[in-house]
Length: 144
Image (tube, rainbow, N blue to C red; front, top):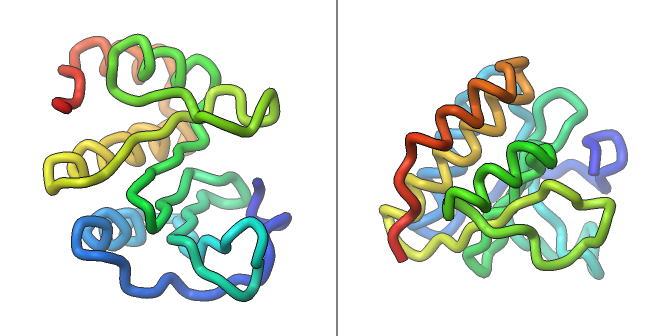
């Protein structure tokens, strides 16, 4: 979803301890818009995490249940999945092709999720996908 399609913009509230460092780090990056992530069925009523945008494009979001969802491109998403660094988004169909997800439970998971967001941020800032895919190839899979 683009920023212009999003519902009401509300500031991000303080998140659980494991998510707050991710959120605060992303919010410091130039050009980021952060907002409350609404529950799909109660937009404007029930917050379900934090959304992050670069311009009008969604970078990704954090859910209160511990899932990080990233709006990666199909090529970047495929490289992350092939490298064992993320999973394909479990729902959404063709409109979400390339999207990936990662579960955040520990500080190590939070560090990995932050790296995933940074990688996607670099893509949205114009870093060539070939460079990003090459970086992914050198990264060890997230320990589980």
